Image (cartoon, rainbow, N blue to C red; front, side, top):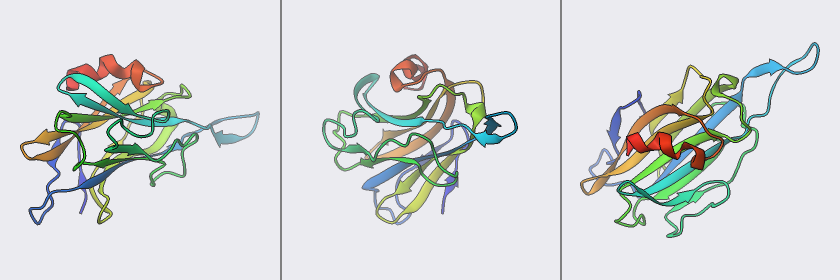
Length: 192
C-alpha cells in the first residue's frame, strides 16, 4: 500500500511487520508536455530531467550520485543510468538504489533532487513523480507527485534521514533553479 505525501509530510521506512527496510529505490518518471514544433504540428519537446542523490554528514555534503558519478564512493547508493528524454509518464525513467544497510553511519541524510539539464521549466513537464519502493518486495512505500508545474528548472523532491535506529522519508517538493545538483545547493540548505 502506497502513501501519497504532501509537501513537508514524513513517513517512517519501517516495514509493517516491524522489520527494517534494507534496499530502497527512488524512482523518477516524467513525460514532456505538448508544445509547438513546426508550423502545424504539436509534438512534445524532449526534456532531460536528472535525478541526483546527495549524501550529507550533518549539513556537509560528503558524496553525490548523479548521471556522471553513478555509484557513491562507499558503494551504498547507485544510479541506474541517465534517461535523456523521459517516457510516457507513470513509470520510472531514472532510478537511484539505496542500500540502507551499507550507508555509512556518518551519513545522516540523503537528499533527492531533480533538475532540468536541458533547461526547460516544469511547466513543460507532465506526469512527473518521485517514489520510494521497497526493492526486495517491489512495494511502493511512498509517492510524491510533482503537480502544478512552475517556471523553475529544479526541484528538491525528498530526503531520507536517520530516525533513531531506522530511516524516514520526508517529501519536500520545493522549487529551485538549476540545470545540475551543483546549481541547486543553495536551495537545499534550508532543508538540512
